[in-house]
Image 1 (spheres, rainbow, N blue to C red):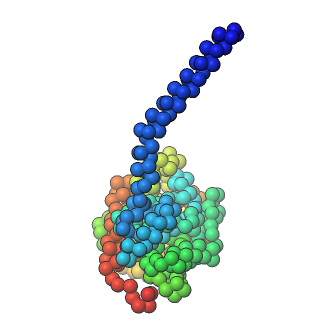
Image 2: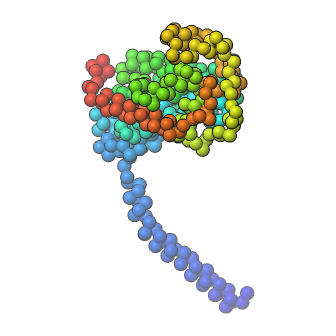
Image 3: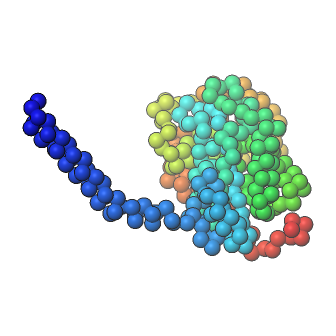
Length: 323
């Protein structure tokens, strides 16, 4: 390369660098104000939240909410990681409860917390993929979660449970936390009186549709269909459970003695899922009959029930024992 060629190359390179700088400067001047505006949007203004997951809130936003919300409520969701038949995700219960508590929080100006993914699921350990906490660990996680937020001034907690195996533990947590931390803790249920709720309850009683069957499959298809593999359920699916036929007859809610025999059914149930079913589906009705639209409507009723519960709860002054 001659001296003149080298000189021209250096000039071209310098011009290119300068041009690049000018382009960058123009872009910076155009978009920087937008970025600054975006970064100054507050997650909480006078207690009104823009974000509801505690993990997404900044500390000042959480403090603003605590200061300005007259009766702040924290919603804690708990589910499980366990087998849900061949077609539903292992995180079915936790995935569903996360969606539910966020919907409730966003409509009630509450903060939602999902402290852990596993629950208490030793009865599903016969199927691979299940992760279970001991009852002591799960209770400890819940108590520490409530205790931490109680320390910061939260007085009202709602627990939303998405897994039957957690029920007794959550009830115990609510009792213990009240006494240990001087806070209000409740596990709301309902609604039970709507047509959809009655229809779902009847399926649960009549077909033992409590795990991976029509009810849960509808919920999964309604909330996260991309995680459901319906093709794994044979078109000619038949129940795989091996329950004694005489005991299975107790499932009929039309019986005059149903109140007693339904309890006899539970008293005679074997402890582990793989004791009585080979595919992990409890019920007698096919998952292929699931109706996602019906499930979404039922979830909406449940969400609105809890939103209204929180609204009315906030109208009640904090009792002296919790102050």
